[in-house]
Image 1 (cartoon, rainbow, N blue to C red):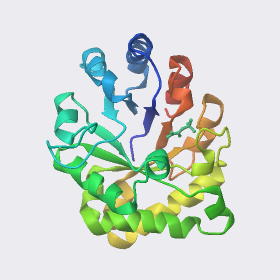
Image 2: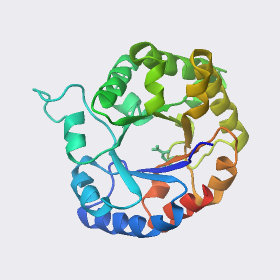
Image 3: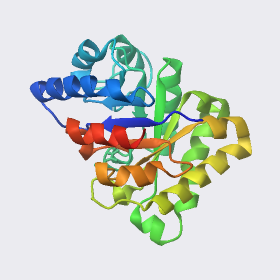
Image 4: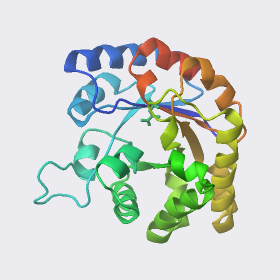
Amino acid sequence: MRKKIVAGNWKMNGSRYEAHTLLEAIKQGADAFSAIDIIVFPSFVYLQQSEEILADSLVAWGAQNLYLGKTGAFTGEISGAMLVDYGCQYVLIGHSERRQLFHEDVNLVAAKFKTAQQFGIQPVLCIGETLEQREAGQTENIIEQQLASVIEAASIDAFRHAVIAYEPVWAIGTGLTATPEQAQAVHAFIRARLAKYNAEIAEGIRILYGGSVKADNAKALFAMPDIDGGLVGGASLEAKGFLAICQAAM
Ligand code: PEP
């Protein structure tokens, strides 16, 4: 039985004050949801606050990105060592906004995945197709390529300590959600692909759905056999809605 995860990707949102309020509210609400894992991914600059507020709570925190290596002349970047310094247990890798807006290719995504694990941080590997790719019948090919590049670079064994988030790009921040059946079909495909390498890892890995998850659609999505929770963007910025999504995962 896989423990469900509800994770909030705050993206480039919030202020110091808003982060404080949101973290406190989630921390307090989380006590009712000990049967699931709750993770927040605030902006880098709010990680110290996250650690201060969430230490000794049921809520874990992570970063939205990292760069390769430990230290060096990489102006503007943050290393895995720095994330460990602030108690991050997870990091988002390969979010579609990073792939599209910041031109992260499959090789860089795979290298970041490996780097996270070298620092003992669990990567949450985000994969998913665009609308054009879906309409062209390319969904499975794209998913397969995105997975294969990481498996090749990091090995299938690395997926023992990783989470996957299936996020159809057309559903992110658009208000469009994959139907539970559409999402389930891709989640089952991901698990089957992994099972070709290692059935035990495929069975154990948690695969989250992301793309306009909200309190009113979460339950039906999370009821699907291969959907192990959600990666939530917009709806994670408001404590009541986010906690309602946690409730839906119980
Ligand atoms: C995301 O950014 O990972 C995401 C799923 O966003 P939203 O829930 O806003 O679609």
